[in-house]
Amino acid sequence: MTLPHARNLIDGQWRDGHAVGASLDPATGLVLGTFADAGAVTARAAIDAARRVFDTTTWSQDRHARATALFALADAMTLRRDELVELLSRENGKKLADAAMEVDATIPKLRYNAALALTDSGRAAQLAPGMYSMALPQPIGVAAVIVPWNSPIILAVRSFAPALAAGCTVAMKMPAQTALTNGLVYELIAEAFPAGVVNAFTESGNTGAPVLVSDPNTDVISYTGSTVVGRAIMAAAAPGLKPVSLELGGKSPMIVFDDADLAAVVPTLTAAITTFSGQFCMAGSRILAQRGIADELRELMAEAMTRVKVGPGTDPETDMGPLIDRAAAERVDRLVGEAAKYAKVLVRGGLVEPTGASAFLRPALIEVADVTSPVVQDEIFGPVATFEIFDTELDAIERANATQYGLAASIWTRDVDRPLRVGRRIDAGTVWTNTWGVVHDQMEEGGFKHSGVGRLNGRRAIEEFQEIKHLVHQGN
Image 1 (spheres, rainbow, N blue to C red):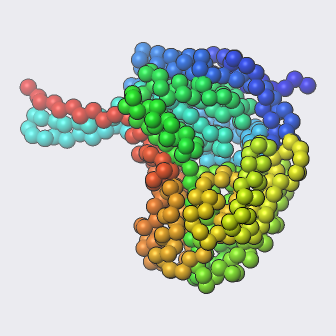
Image 2: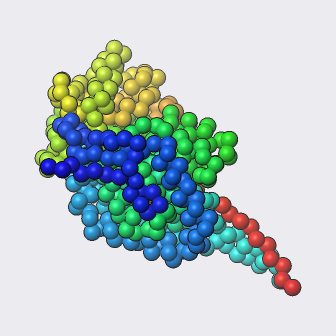
Image 3: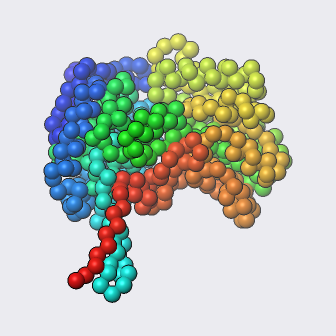
């Protein structure tokens, strides 16, 4: 059987890389297919193509062409939706239902940004008789987009769709862990967009991404990933004074008050740490329980975590798929073992196969008193939740805010006033009440503190890729 082979899309043409890489099934460790592994040379070609299209064509001025292309990509994804879902599940390891959720949330995001392309027209005012002031948005230029592997389809679109709606062109690096999925997305992009508008490559190393950040022909950077890499990108972009949009790590507190409905809390908190196998920047990795219900919630959560069925993402009976690869599973398992030295491990979890190539890892629950503990402070990026106890609202707020992160939080209570009272004081870009993980294309998303800079989704997203030009006109 011939294995599928994914290539890179540069200036409307299929391009090989400097080597051939292998895409592995995280459930088995077996090869699913191969891909053209790119690097610095391909990155420069992507930038050159994007620069040429931006500087010499009408793309940046033609809002109707931009909207038409974004609608076309949405239509193409709709037609091949099932293929995308199955490939993403096999290659990334996430459950079929989670893969479907990702694809199904991506398609309306494209349509929303297509609508923005048509309606984003600036402001105008008459300052005096015969004098007019116009604030006109214009695209910054070439957008460099760097995408992680945990949700590659939606996170790529979340960055490049507003960039394209604004009138930018794109040079994009995607991750090797989802190379075959990337290749299918590239096929759909090639069908929908004029050559050179979106240029995309897959890289296993780290030579192409730095070129995207530092090359003088890229004008704005959009990165989703770790806080450590986000800081490095910001530093590398500083000499060129390039604007950056960074959505980075998270350590989301799930604050459960005494009056909460535990029947609703437990399944949602379990899903919050096992969805995408906990490999999610908004994962509900910190459970904060008010003392009055702490004993009951601790027992219920331990039971729920123990019952999670770990298996292949393509198995409909699976509750949680494998991590992205064996190395990731072993790293998370090691961190849980180290936590036993300073905290109480309520549910150990552990590798499903102590030896072998699969990346299956059972979820873990760890009770921690000291908020400065590594398992509380560090983003683990796996199915590991901490359990902390608080007494008062002030105590909950102080604990919730006691990390460098500020991406998301959740408050569970029947008190109708408490969510606003507490939510306003939580340092997080998104705060949910009695739910978790809900995002909308129309509403901004992003982080406080070291969880990021800038905003995605909503009208603010397109502004990350625009300059505002003030024109003042005095009539004759």
